[in-house]
Image 1 (cartoon, rainbow, N blue to C red):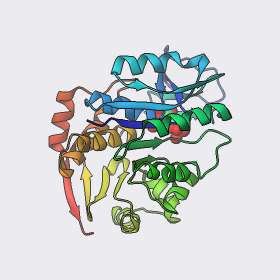
Image 2 (cartoon, protein in one colour; image 1 turned 30 degrees about the vertical axis):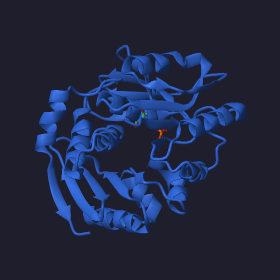
Image 3 (cartoon, rainbow, N blue to C red; image 1 turned 90 degrees about the vertical axis):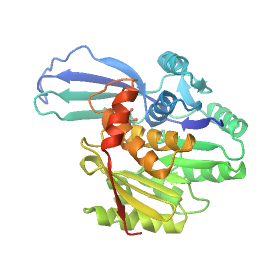
Image 4 (cartoon, rainbow, N blue to C red; image 1 turned 135 degrees about the vertical axis):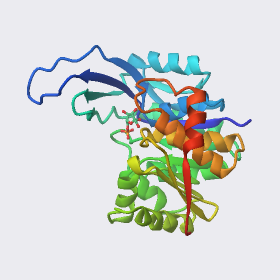
Length: 310
Ligand SMILES: O=P(O)(O)OC[C@H]1O[C@](O)(CO)[C@@H](O)[C@@H]1O
């Protein structure tokens, strides 16, 4: 089985702190939080590995805090091909207010990639990619890399006859879908898709029209996470609205489930069920764990799929 390759240029250490009530401007007391390797590429690599998909993870990490990433990759059997540069990767703080249930996130932009580390990372990607490889490009770009970085990488990967699943928003997404070659799969949330089409998408039918536009333009698969409303999938000229009991808690797990199912040659309906179950199953889970397989199977059975006009 060909491995899936995940590329992350701006990894992050996620720290989650729980507070009874967050009081802005005051001294707040939190429970001892734990720090986990994160960022979309790491989360997707972990989710894929938990479903038995062979994964190679690459990108750029800082020598000062690469150890927890290496430990996670070793524990999950993920082939670690990250390039190291001096310094450390960024970190985030997630403040969970138990009273309101709201999470406040504080994200750092990250460290610029040093030119030799970037060159080594590109060399690594070139070496790893085979015809037919699926490459997942994810996350916000570090300072210093231009907005067309993913568009440029997609073109480079097309020379290897590799397909790209792209999980990012903002200008990086707009550049990637604004030219050719296109990514094989995109995974925006509702806001990111709205920004890409330049208009609000309040109803599911608005999201459908926007997704169909990009599908007709040549993006083979579009997976849009809709939070409480589930997710919208467009593939093979068809569209579905998939809903679960819980809300889509985790966009990274949604994409990991979708790609894992296809890697295992399951059909589209099974892939949508697994994607939603992986995502809703992540609600309440902090850190580098996936929900139990039995939990995901139960959740998958409860997913409701509605065919939409395409
Ligand atoms: O790469 P971005 O878009 O800045 O997002 C990073 C954050 O998103 C997550 O990957 C969750 O999707 C976190 O692990 C991380 O803190």
